[in-house]
Image (cartoon, rainbow, N blue to C red; front, side):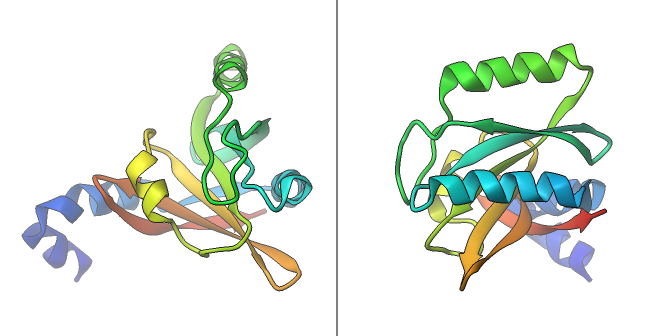
Amino acid sequence: MILDYTAQTPKYAALFRTKLLMQSISLTKDQLQKMVAHVNLHTPMEACGLLAGLNSKVESVLEVTNQAQSAVRFVMDPIEQLKAFEWIETNGLELIGIFHSHPVGPETVSPADIAEASYAVVHVILTQVEDAWSARGFWIENGAFCEVRLQII
């Protein structure tokens, strides 16, 4: 019934059509652990990075400094981000995801995440729940979002 709903709601129609194409991304346990180690190192500030790969499969996790040095917002260091984009292109990969942490929540996208989403990629949000990190994927488009399944392989 999701298709009936989106047909009646143009703002969400494109989002859900795109989500049907990008239903999940896959990453290894080691890649997830690398993201967790990066965000854990920078807690209580948000940490961020890029996910490079092909066909919804992560091949590399690229850590980028959060220039904002904020507990509730991230801004990727532009020089590091550019170098990461160059590395992705040089290695024949594509940008398939952006990851960042919400050290104090929420476990979903924030209004700032929605407002500042600039790339048509999966956004992986890592949140500390009790003493462990949880990861969830989201597609953000046109001021709306939906969850994307993360496959840990």
